[in-house]
Length: 400
Image (cartoon, rainbow, N blue to C red; front, side, top):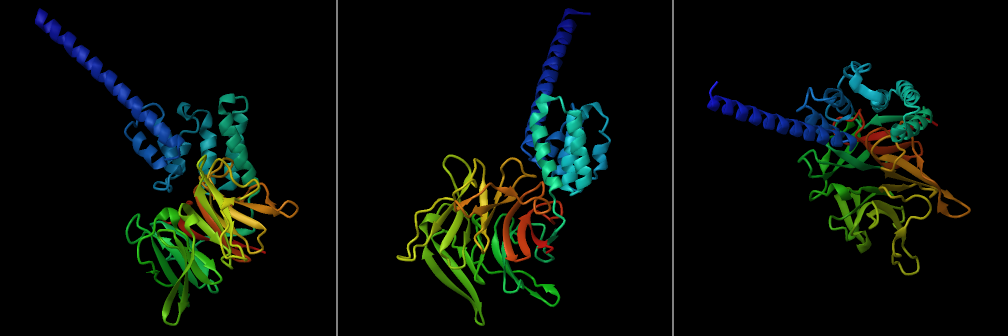
C-alpha cells in the first residue's frame, strides 16, 4: 500500500469519526429536547422530537406515552403502551404513566390499580419522591370522585374543532353567549345562539371586532350580558329587545386595565378579577363600589388562603356569597389547570383553604371558568379527552 493511500485512509477514518461524533451529539441534543418537552407536558412537540430518533435509547417508549397524553394523538390505542410493560426501557415509572393515561380516559378503577402498583414497586426509591407525592394526590382525588355529577359536552353546533371558550347562559338556558376562533384560527369573536324545538341554532357573531383570548369576559348579570370593551376602560351591558341589541356603556373602570378575567355581581357593585402579581403569577383581586359616593375602592388581594405562588384565574362567586370558584395550576391537582373553590368562614369573614372540585369536574387536562347557571347546573370549559378540538364547553349536572 502506497504512502498516499495510507494517508487517504487515515484522513477518511478521521473524517468518519468526526462525523459520527457530531451525529451522536446531535442525536443526544434532540433526545434531551424531547425529554424537556415531555417534562413540561408539551406532548405534541415531544412526539415530533422523538420521531427523529426512533431507535435511540427509550424514544419509542416515551413517544407512545406522549402521544397518549397529547390532544392531537389522544385516540392512540392504549395497547401500544402495554407492549412495553416488561421492557427494560420502561423503567420504574411505567405504572405511573399508565395510571395517568387511564385517568385521562376516566378509567378510574384501572388508574387507581396502576398508581398503587407504581407506589408498591417504588416504595424505597427516594429519587422518585416527586412522582410518588403526585401519585398520592391523584389517588386522593380518585377516591373522592363524585357519582352525583355528570359532565356533558354542549351539543352541536356549539362545540367545534376550534377553541370554544367560556360562555353565559341567559333566560331559561335557551340563549348562549360564547367565544370561538372558528372563523379565523387565533382570532376570537363573541357568538350568540338560541335553543329551539330542534336544538341549538347556528351561532352568529355579535362582536364588532376580534377579542384577545387572554381577556375574554362574558358574564350573565341579571339576565343581561356584561363584558369589558377591548381596551378595558369600561364595562358594557348588552340587552336584547324586539329591535335587537341595546348596548349601554357602564362605569369607567381603569383599574381593570391589566385584568384578565372578571366576575361582576348582579348589582354591578362588586368585581373580582385576576391580574398578574409582580412577585408571582395571576392572583385574584376584588373591589367594591361605595354606596355613598358611587366610586370604586382601590382593588386589593382577595383575603384568606386563596392566592398562591401559582395562577388563580376565572373567579365566580355564588349568589349567596359563601363560595368562590376559580381555576389554578397549583400542585396537587389532576392536571394542568383545575377548578377549585373556597368557602367563607363566617367567624373571620375570610376565605378558607382551597378545595379541589374533584372528579368529574376536573380532568388531567385544562379545566377552567366554572360558573353556576342554576341551582343544579353549571358550565365549564375543558379540553379533556371528550372535547372535539381544543377547549370545548361542558355542562355540569348535579343530581340532587
